[in-house]
Image (cartoon, rainbow, N blue to C red; front, side, top):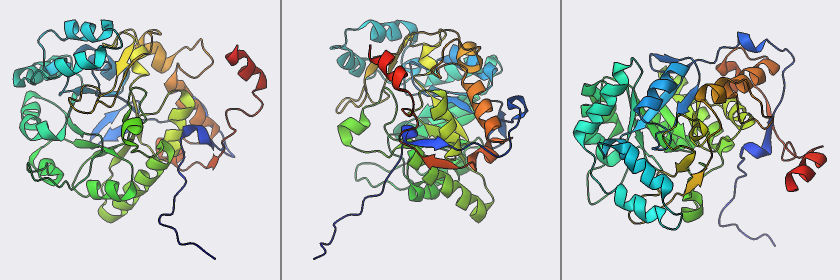
Length: 381
């Protein structure tokens, strides 16, 4: 007797469960083009610095711009709440683990100040960098126009789960269609993980979509809420929406895999899954120039009612230049990420990111353990 099912479950895959298949032709890594675009703004490397207080401050944004990537300043964070953000960051870094969440709830209860939004943007623009700033939907209506007038080049709207439609009795939700029409600069939004949500968001006129719910090293959304989709599947589904929307409209909306990337192989698999760029968070807190000074914390950790993040120690490893471009003196894939990307593309015969997205990938849960008996023994000692 067959029993009817209430739900059919789909298999979803994360980075550790898949492998990239090499090509029939190889190319020199230095011949690969890894540029990334948001509308008409081009970045030499397809890496975004996360809009998190331990990752990006104005000085780090300037440095990351010079390295060729896209940094995003958190304009709901410490930089725009306090005149002297360094002192506040040090409070969080030095707080005992059992007290740090309560401390953050207090620190982040300080109101965002309009003049500090303007001040931080002008600091970045004065150095000649591209300035991207991030807001939550509740503050976007007020602050996006202020940021644009101050010289911001890109507006990013982020929340745990982003949809084109929001139902609420208490307030009028943010309309991405209206926002994109009102602003002259590109708009990126996040985060999403499904084909249907991605397609609907693209139809509002956005220029970039962040993909990922809960995979970040300092995020506990998956533990607290149980919500999320592993990053390989999420990226594949959202990339499918991008390609179908391009056929439908002629507009290309960049897909940015946000969260869950630890090592070079994770990053490369994100691109083969369909990403146009990737977000680095905890990775960049290991740079000696990062404001977190070897610490990182979740964006939702300061929530007044339901914290969904944790402070972690990532430890400082060296200068940003070495993390991104090497030379590397470790064998675990945690340095020279740009070199890893170029080498993987070369082994697959891909001259561009778009070509790399078309490379074959296989389900391979044994990819990291096959033949690694001695490595496993040494790691357990």
